[in-house]
Picture 1 (cartoon, rainbow, N blue to C red):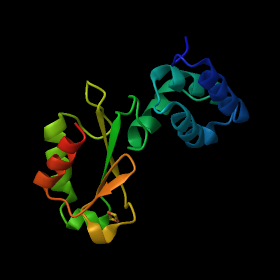
Picture 2: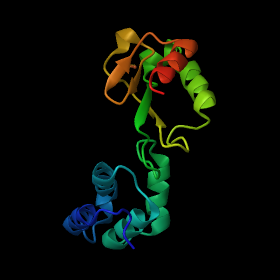
Picture 3: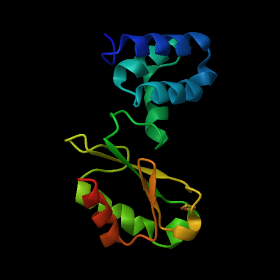
Length: 157
Ligand code: FES
């Protein structure tokens, strides 16, 4: 069974896997490329990668769950990235994240049921002077407080 409706993407995935066939050490690289291609890593994709590289599915799964960058769910229409780099952290990004989690009812790595928002944590967005910072898709929002972060969300609803 194919992980998405798009045959072309599945073919490209097979090419990525073929380029590293039988190379367990390429696992993270292949997962990165697969996620870039498809947008997330559903179970069928993980199975194909495990099979192609010669690693167990549980090994693939543990790598996918260890790195917050990887996600097994499709990203939302609006992808929220909250910075927890040092500068943002000391300026209050944990409180921002906590408030957004509560508001959206999801944890980092997850998407809302309506497919509107997904949430992730990142390390330094290169705008430390504006911390705490979050990105919504490609747009940065800085000097946030928990309340203003929620206001930003509302502007995307
Ligand atoms: S630490 Fe958040 S932008 Fe640099």
